[in-house]
Image (cartoon, rainbow, N blue to C red):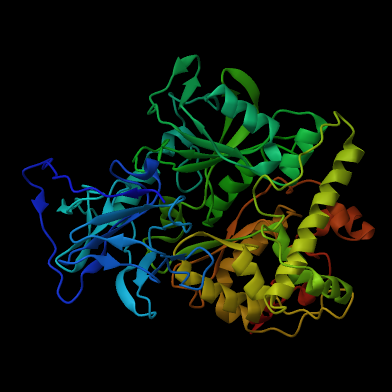
Length: 582
C-alpha cells in the first residue's frame, strides 16, 4: 500500500490564505481532503483521498469501508485490513495502488465504520472550482481550496467564484476563430486560421510505437506537446501536454486492416491538475473519413444543425503529424462531453441535474431483441471479468491485410459477434433486463454528468426503448404512447427531420447506435437528442440496412419513409408522430 504519512508544517503561500485547524466533536477519524483531479505533491497526479485521526489515541480502521457514490457493495469499494492511524496522523490513499474507484467532479466519498454506519462523508461535491482545487474539511464543513495539503493540516484558500455561465461562455468563445464558426452556424472568416491547418503532436517514441502497433486496444499514451501551424506560421497556442488514444469501431478496424495510417483518435488536453485548454477544448476527436469520400459530411451537417437551432459540434479540417510524420487529413471535432458545449446546446444549467448518455452500437443488440437460444448460452456462461466491447488489451489485434477488404470486413464481423456474445452475458447477468444491463456495463454510457442520473436513464430505457419480446425472431414493440411524455418531443421531431432530409442511415431512424441523449433536469421528462457520427449521411453507403427496394428509392425517404419499415411502427418516430397528431 502506498501511504503518505506526513507531519510537516505548511508554509503559507499567500498572506490571504487562511489556516483553519479543524476541531471535530465526537469523532476522531474523518475524511479530511479529496482530490478529484490530482493536486499537491502526491499520487503522481492521480485522484487521492486523505483521512485524519484528530483524536488523542491510535485508531484502527479494521473493517472500515471507503466508497464512492456507487456504494459499499461495488467491486471498487475499499475495505481496510490492519491499518492503524496514530493520534494526529494523516493518511493519503492514491487511486491505483490504494483504491480502485475514480472520483468525479460531482461524486460523493464516504467512509463506513465496521458496523456499516457512516463515519464520515463529503456529501455530493458541488462540481468543479478549478482543476487544481481540492475538497477539504474546515470546522466540520467541506469547502474547495486552491491549496492542496496532502498529509498535512488543511489550508483554506477560497477559489474566486465566477458565475459558471460566464466561465463557460468565455471557454466557448476561445474556439470561435479556430473553428471559423459562429454559434448560429454562420461562417466566421479568420485571417489567422486557414480552412485547413497543420496539427503537430510530439510524443515519446516508445509511446508512439505502442499507439501505432496496438490500435485495437484504444489505450491512452501521453504526448509532450501540441501545436498548430497555419499558412506556414505557428499559431499562438499553449504548449500543453496531454494524452491521445485511438477511438472507433468500423472507422478504426477497416483502415488499419486495409493498411492505412489515418486511424481515428481522441485527445485529452492538459495534464491532471492543470487548467490548460486547446482553444477552449479539454477533449477533442480526430475523425477520419471512412465511407466519406467528400471529407465534408460531418462538417456540413453539424453546421446545418446549428442553423436549425439544434445541438451541434464544431468541426474543422486538420492535417495531423505525429512526431513530424504525416498521418492524414482529419475532421477535428470538439467532444460533446464538455460543460461549455452543454451550455451552448441547452443554455445555463444545473450541473447536478445535467447529463449526457451515449447509445453505443451494442445498445442496438438489446433493443432489437436477444433470441432464446442466445439466452440459454448466456445463462451457463460465466460473466466475463472484462466485457469484450470494453477498451483494453484483451481485444484481438487487428490484422493488416493491405487492401483485402473482404478479409477486413470478415474480421470486423467476428469482432461484432464477440461483442454480441458479451451483451448476452450482461443481459442474463442483470436479470434479463436490457435497461439495467445497458446502464451498468456502459452500452448506454454516462459520458457526462453525475452518476446519480443513472437510475433515471434506466427507467427511461425500460419504459420507452427496450420494449421487445425475445421469444420472437425480431423485435416486437408494444404500443407505446409514453415516449413523448418522457422527452422533449418537439426537439426530437426536429432532430428526426434533420436525420431524414440528410438521409442519415446511421441514426436512430435506422438503428439505435451513434447518438446521445441529454437531460438538464435529472431525466424529468426532458430527454433531448444530440446528434453524432454523421459520415453515413447523404450517401448510398449503408442502404443495405433496409430492403433492396428501399435502397433504390432513397431520394424519397425524407417524405415517404425515413425508416426501414412503416413509420407508425418505428419505436421512436411513431410515438412522437402520434403525439403530434393529438
